[in-house]
Image (cartoon, rainbow, N blue to C red):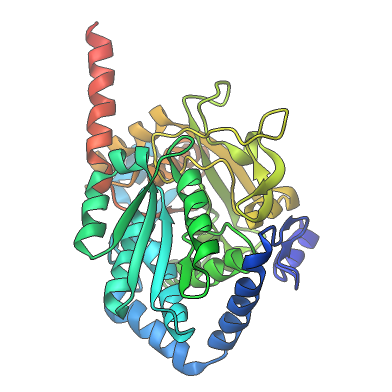
Length: 409
């Protein structure tokens, strides 16, 4: 374990590799753009003026630091560990996605780009990108699967209201994978004038590294807050994983703290024994998707399999390459939660804490509902509450309504 922890501190390497994973598997037309991006990011992060501007926006526009809330009634309900919630749902726009969008938006402006594009699944990254574009005076196109447009109509309206153009992806399963395909195709044709704001720790190098660096503020704040509140580190941290940006942001500052257990939760959809799930790390095999080598759901011929989750932000057949590395190193444990368990977790948090979580975040809560009772009352469990559930209310209403109808028949 110690060797794995030490190795994790120096990834990615100069080739953008997280151990065997990551890298840069892209058309030749994008290689120069990625090289320029890597150099611009390195230069920006060394520039005190860039960091001061970003920190100012995070503080005065996004509303950071977000609170770390003791979930007293949830703790009493479950028994066992004391539970704390890292409240990324209270970030401006309602999720952790703004942390990264602000950083990449400033980088786009620094590189002289006038327009940004983004892909989105649940719509939270699309809303964050549209928000940043409005704030910084950039034009914005957001690529979104047609099925996700249907599921997340409120976020589509928000993006339009913010001045962004939402471009539907109509191929494949019409979800996040297909939106990303369309965004990459557009970027290949418009690379000179367009900056691609990737929303998760996925894609070719340097994107997984850039997104991690902009999201690690989640874990850095949590570390400082729990030490100030309790004088010790948590015993366990739980976060949901689709592409994995909130989880990497939360986990990374704790990687060297071997006494802190880290647990990532994927979407098991209708069950990992069915073909309707998004449990990439549990059931996938190494393969290339969207420019990066990582774990991937694929059939025996290497064709990408469709992913399924009630959560539009988790039904992605790949995962960030750093998560693939952390799984193989043994530093992070990955598990999965079904749609039904996530819905039960939404109801539990609403009832005990008066908080409506995003369906993505509900997967982490559902895992905590299993873990907390197995822990002692002296132990501390932190959940990354990555987003709020306003966007999911209609989906939750439909799902719970269907369950009630099923009972009555």
